[in-house]
Image (cartoon, rainbow, N blue to C red; front, side):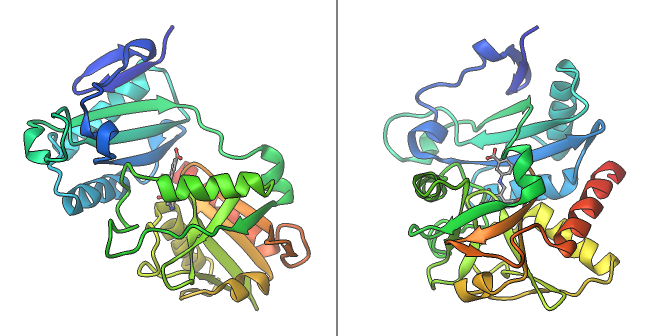
Length: 286
Ligand code: PXG
């Protein structure tokens, strides 16, 4: 049976799930998206993801042509049609079909689609042994251009950072912001640990405010692990005792090498392990 994809109210077989070459999402990257996980049949942090989708759309002046309840129903319908209990959900809203030329007013109706599928970001081994990363030369979006807080359909800076990572023989790249401070990775937020304190860049340091990031901050508070949001420089990364990445797809990934420097002992650290285990428990609680 073919995978079913929801496009504007109808389910299509994956092979037939197509959008127009005149859609401005494709022509100009004019649109927004969300990447969500389903654990044991429950859509993890559903409300947070929907809020971020609507916030992203608001900033790019895109009116989502469905209510929140309709989008929830579309997700449920697509997950059910594919018999998934654990999967990844991609919500995409584009400006819709228009003409050549930027003018968004010539796109009468935004398009929306929902893909449910499996996703594996990094090999299993990296979760156990840790991952090496580099810092990329390409920076995260300037906050006065399209804000990095918007999950837009233009990920070119992030993709260029990933190409730099691949050239260096590693799986991920840390991106700095326009001031040269640490922002985040291509599709994950970053945390460090030093002297028992967890730290992550602030939401104004040029990052997407990750939902997994926020879950980790909450877990730290519940577990009485000190955690602060503060501006970090590359030096802070190099001298960290532990480092890890967080994201809906990646979950919690230990980082053991940055730009050739071994982090801590070179193995995933105790606080990283504790938080990763707590996160996995949390995904099953809802
Ligand atoms: N930063 C960026 C730039 C992201 O794109 C995150 C941080 C982590 O945010 P969440 O809310 O997921 O904790 C993201 C998320 C994909 C994919 O298919 C990408 C993301 C999430 C899920 C899937 O590449 N990016």
